[in-house]
Image 1 (cartoon, rainbow, N blue to C red):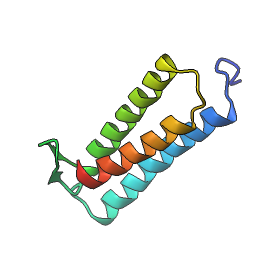
Image 2 (image 1 turned 135 degrees about the vertical axis):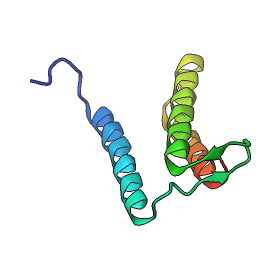
Image 3 (image 1 turned 90 degrees about the vertical axis):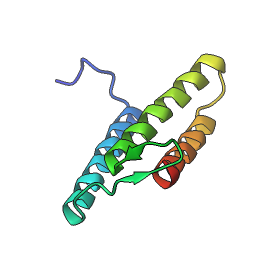
Length: 92
């Protein structure tokens, strides 16, 4: 049934993480409507959803750059992506 895609545990965990983040944002929106808009260091007025999108997009670029530039293990870009996401939710 799902043979059209090579489902591995890392792939499944990635999708589980993304869907979990979306459901957490939904719960926060129900609890405190309005998206918690603020203006960050990039000069953009962003909501929680915007910051999630920016952090996911930046993380994808971090991993793609890492895969394109080196053959090393993926633990370092994972740490960089987590730092980027923390920065996005804290300062952007």
